Length: 408
Ligand code: C5P
Image 1 (cartoon, rainbow, N blue to C red):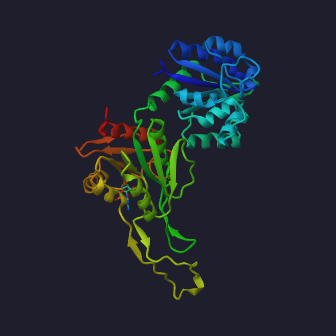
Image 2: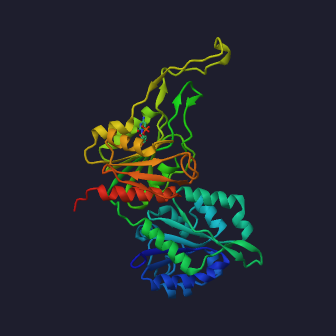
Image 3: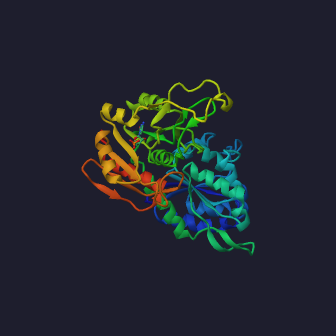
């Protein structure tokens, strides 16, 4: 995958920066174009001259063009480069740079580029063991992963400080395989397609402070939207209330109730090429939710009766309306899964249904992995092993892609 690919290599100030000349040499050997961007601290460990020689390009170290010199780059270089790249890889990525990226700082060329990227961002966190295991660093890494950033774990072993543990920059061939794998996952095969995704639970109000909801975390839908966007699609994510960060380059619309989700989805259905409904939509809503908080003291007896009314089945109504759209539903079943899912596929007029069983270890709500089967109208049932939700998302998109029509 590396041949002909454009790689922005960000280098920040850790001792492992001394290994990057080798990485550049191997990337160039594999046929990639490499544009190096260095933080100021990185230049203490390896010189721009070395890296420029190996990458055969001027190394970028400054944000602003030097007006007095005959500078070849323009003020908008950060935008040009961000659009140019197929992937940006930061290695080594220090705790400081990771923190800056997590919080959207743009105080040098490297972090500014990160904000302007449309391509995937990948990091190799590399630092001393205590800095790596520090809770703040770990929280930042988790937050970045949650926005669709790819992270390669550091190797464990002896560190420059004399301490031992995780923190080493992985060997060059491991780094090459990591980048290759990302390029494979995010090749721009959905460019021009609009993918609409629903995610998370819905909340049906009982009164101004209480609601009926469920334990959906939204992770599966967010992974689908992130994967679609990384593959070049225009991704819109209609999400119920969840505690997740919006993946990069995804347009997010927040809703609360099933009816709000239905309105938001219907309004965008016509323009969509693919609709993937991962949301755990509440089946019932409370009739006439109270305008004021329901007080315990004001209720007579020990019981409170709520009258519920069936919510619209959003997916079913889309199945009745669909013209060119590829429609994907999810089914969460605890028994007779395949039979129920097949029945749902027919009844809701779907092109694909993804079945998962929340009782299996490593599947269902709030996990980072999922165990699913993918069913299609031809009766095919593909059982997948346990995979990350991001990988499951890509496998669903692979199936969807085969069904899309492409105008030449
Ligand atoms: O019928 P069931 O709720 O099991 O179907 C699940 C699928 O239907 C999911 O894709 C879910 O997002 C969608 N659904 C919906 N509207 C509902 C209930 C479920 O769109 N009211």
